[in-house]
Image (cartoon, rainbow, N blue to C red):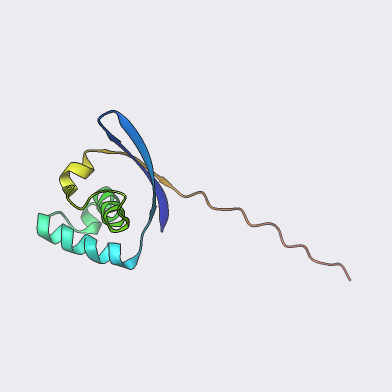
Length: 94
C-alpha cells in the first residue's frame, strides 16, 4: 500500500511518500495498544494516520521521539497513489 501523506509543522508543509510494510502494521498494533487507541475497524482514519506514522518512523522520515498524538495533529491530507492505466492489449488479426 502506497500513498502520499501531507503534514504541516510550524507553517512548513511536507509531502511524504508512504510505503506500508508488514513491519509498520505490526508496529501499529503495538502503538495502538500502548496508547489505548481504538481498533482499525472503529477508527479507519486513525488507522491510516498511525500506520503512516509507523512507516515514517521506520524509514527515518520523522524522529522516533515524535509522539503519535503530536504527529496526528500535523496531518493535513492522505492522497492515494494514482494507479497507472494499463494499455489496451494489442492483438494480431489472423
